[in-house]
Amino acid sequence: MRYQKVLLPLFIAALLSGCAGPPKAAIEAAKSAMSAAQSVEAADYAPESFQAAEQAMTALDAELASQAQKSSGRSYKQAEALAQEVKNLAEKAKADAEKGKEQVKAEATQLLAGLKEALPKAEKMADQARAVKGIKLDFNALKAEMDAAKPVLDEAQKDLEAGKFAAAKAKAQAVQDKLTAGEQMVNQAIEAAKSSKKK
Image (cartoon, rainbow, N blue to C red):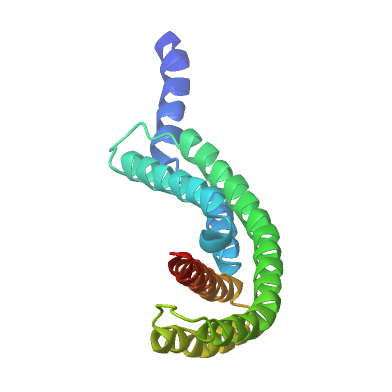
């Protein structure tokens, strides 16, 4: 009788341990939070936060796989804690992405507005440079660069209107970089031509 009193609780504990299953509700909540983060493009607009959530998800998957391989003595306490961590990190990634998206939208809008004024000015500057005597500059190549920039700006504007803010900003920035490089090249050519006159 004494042994029965000792063994019965141990048997029940072992039975409960052997029958313990994964924390389905916590796992589903984690997956749902990850999907919500992906839906707002967290990988693009909050890459660091989303990467942290992905790493936690990888750890959760590894822990679940480790427990599933055990024939007995399974414990899902760590998995439940990891699932909660995934949920928290994914929710943070979503919030960060929403803020980041608005910031990128504002930056893309500002870039495009500036370029609509900068491109005609750059074309005018190139035309004025033609009048500089002795200037050595490939004006055909320069014009080709500026002509190529126009459809890229149109695409960037369409991306902006479609909510593809990261793509819009990247395209606008690429045009900005080319215009800046072209302006520097023209200024250097003008200075070189003036210097040669003095000699």
